[in-house]
Length: 146
Image 1 (tube, rainbow, N blue to C red):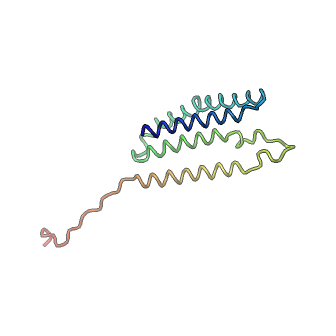
Image 2 (image 1 turned 60 degrees about the horizontal axis):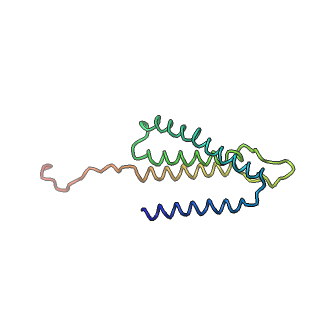
Image 3 (image 1 turned 180 degrees about the vertical axis):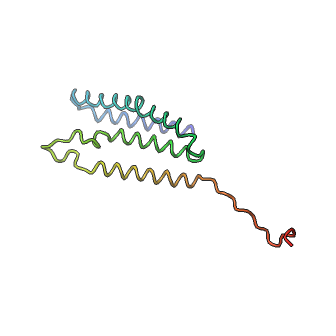
């Protein structure tokens, strides 16, 4: 497991360095815009998403069976992150009337399909985790039944 973690850290560092390399020709206004997005993402995650997930978790944990808590919590984190990530295109901000190639996809439909797919995966996982009720054992020719 330690080797796997080291490989993940190295892969993350490599991707970060690659991203910085790709930004080497950015103008100042582009770097400023990227910086604003990074800071806004951190603020949205730590200031909005994390408190909502924690509050919801505290409220729903007694209502959800133990075997379903983990998949539901993971789904909420994934769905919240997905929603925050695509929030700007879901709202239509950034589109330009004079350029129909910007925001020209059915983003709301795609988000709904991803949300539905996530819900289906979570439901299947909950069904898989659900404890099985044991059936009563029937013993043929039980001597007590004569």
